[in-house]
Every structure is written in C-alpha cells, then in structure tokens.
Image: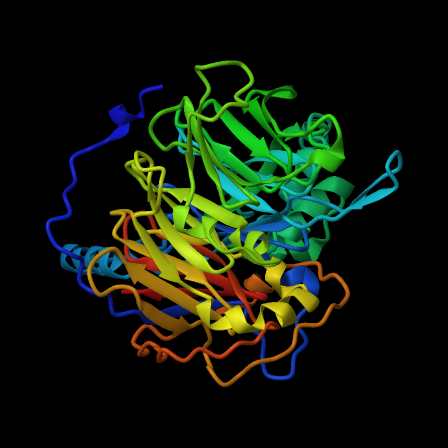
Length: 513
C-alpha cells in the first residue's frame, strides 16, 4: 500500500502562538454539599462536524444534546442588521451552547446465557453525516450500538376555543385518534403540551383547559431509534468510528473490529481478529480504533502494547496484517513491571488532513506522522511527575484510568486531561513542551468525593448552567497536584474554533481562547 499519497505540503511556517484560555460555561455542576450520582457521570463527549451541536453521554445511558446559541435569534427576538452582524462576530470568536434535548439511549440489560449484567453506560457517541438537515447520532454501550435520529418538529399549540364548538368536532377528533397510536404522540416536557398529549390519549377534555391561551407554534425536538446493531461483540465495545463514505462505520472491542453498513443492522463483517487459538497466548488487545478522515479504505487502531497499526481494507477481507506499525523506538529500552501497562494507548485521533495521529497513553501525549513509523513527531509529558508513584497507582487501580485526547481543526494544538481536573493544552512548535494547564472548575478550591447513588430520571446537565465568559483562566504552575477522585477524562475540540469541551464527574466545562 502506498501511504505517501496521503502526504500533503506542510504549511507550518512558524510555531503557533500560545493560546490564552478562559472559562466560558459549565453545565451540571452541583451545589456545595450535594451528592454526585454515579449515573450522572459523563462518559462521552463529541462535537458535530460543523460545531453547531455537542453530544454528551453519561453512565445512566442518556444522551444529552446541546446546540450553539450565539447568533441565533429566538422567534420572539428581532434584531437589526448591525445587531445580527455583531452577534455573528461574537459567535465566530466565542461560541456558546444551550441545552437542546436528551433521550434515554440504553437501558440496563442482563445476558442470561452468560450470566452477565450489561450496564447502560454510554461508551462512545459519534455524529453521522446529515444530508437532509436531520441529525443522526450513533451511541453504544458495552454490547449494543444504536442509530438515533434527532429532529425538530413544529408543534402547533391549541388556541382559545369555545366549548360549544368542541362538541361538534368531537367525532372528527375520535376519527383522527383511530389513526394515531399512542407511541406516535410525541412527549414534551412543557406543561401545556404534556396535558394535550394525555388528553388526546384518553379522549377527555376538561372545560377549563379549553379556555387556556397558548402562544404560537413552537419548536420541539424528539429522538427516534432508527437502527439497533447488536450481537456482534463478545467483548466490551471501546470504539466506534464513522467512515468518510457516509455509509459505513466500524465498532471495536478488545479483540475484534467489525465493519457495518448504516442501513443494515443484522449483518456486519469482521475485518480484524486478534483472538489467538489459545487465549493463554494473548499478548495484546485493541484499545481504540478510528477511520481515516479522507481515505475510506484506511483505518488505525491502538493496542495495549503502545502500538498504532494502520491498515488498508483493500488488501484483504481480513486485515490482520498491518500496512504500517507506529511505535516509539525509545520505549524499547529498559523495561519494568509497569512499562507495558503505562504504554497502553487509551485514545487516538486523526488530524483533519489525515496526515497526523494524536495518541494518549497513561504517561504521555504523542503526535505521529503516518509516514514516520520509528518515533513520534512530538511527545508531551503528562504524568511524568507520577512515575515514582506507579506502585501506589497500581494498588488502587488508577494506573488503568483511560484519558482521551483531542486536537484543533488546524492540527496545531492538542489537549488531554489529567487528575485533579486538570486540562493540559499543548502546541506543536518550539518551546511548547510545558504547554498550558487549566483547572476545570468554577471554584478551584472546591473538591468533593464522588459517591454512588440511586438513578435519577433526568440528566444533571438539564439543571441549567453557570456562565462567566470574562473569567480569567485558572492557569497553574509546573507543580501539579494529584487527586485520583477528580479526573478529567473526556475532552473534545470544536472543529472550527478554539473551544474545548471537557468533562469531569457530572460537570461539562467549556474553555475558549
């Protein structure tokens, strides 16, 4: 396979200037002394391709969607042209988001054949191509992938009516009700529409409700499950990735990667199988997988041994032989009991042009050129200060924590999370080894232990947000504290702006530069 075709002329004339990061928004932060429920912990964050939407999955099996609000006027607001231009300017400089909708994607299940409990936690969410303006999103737990369609619907509100007029129209309403099943009646959270739904289902109307004055048409958002892709993985799913062809996607577990067609839910093709004949011979597992953003035949996956394999699906039906293996030659020296554990890759991301891959292991953040397989282009130290504590980290299982990574749309800046809710941001250039460190917290001194509690019916992210757009960043020095109870594991970079969404516990933070 000739990977040189993916090489593009470099446009990096000079190192990028360091970015000054400021706090923007936070959703879901609890008040002091309020317990954090385990099911409210965020487990996945993903921006839509245009950056207008953000999807957040949690351990309770819910998916919450936020939409960009700046520069968008509500139906009751009327702006002059100059005001709209100012709003558009602000939106390009500092995007802000508001709650749009949420839905229950997965429920807890039990596999009776294997006597295995399948939790509802959302492992990954991915946006799909939207040719007709509708929003499609893939979500997965450990075993089942679902395709959801999220769409806005105009809801015509009831007007003030005369109860005598309603008597003559009762028969027509009953006739219409015979063609509408209860499942087809959308459920809304505002009081008037909820009453309308219940009354239509029961064919009962109270006279006092008929005189209610309700406003004009409203936008309501609903989500409907279009496909369920199940029974294809024996091990827990750790990755899903959409192909650039807009028709297929992959799902990966510890030992296999399957290729799916979005329109076919009862069949998938196994393209990578690392399971040995004897499980005692198992030496590594798949930890993360992602399609190339441009070439639909290329995909990369990381392993627990610190390798990144780049494969070409055109070579054979079963892509067991890698086209290229990216590995750090410097890591092949002295080895210890913890060497392979900390080398395990927890996340990989392609750059927009597909030339570079960003990877995160427990200790470092690494930038790779897919045409250079001997060593990374750059290595950024994240947990080097924890190396003397590896034994303690192993004893309390913190050494197995998985942190995600992300990179900016121009491919010049990179971010990942760490302990004590620290967000680490780097730039590719001279003098960028230290990078910037921001503590993701409205109150840096506030730290509360996370406790497990009963499941709540709604996501904590629907409880409003705190905004402080002019707040100065909480940059720290080079001495990093360590708290295993507060870790920032999920990050996503806006595709068109220097805006980072990061999640710690049950809180979603936004930082901009």
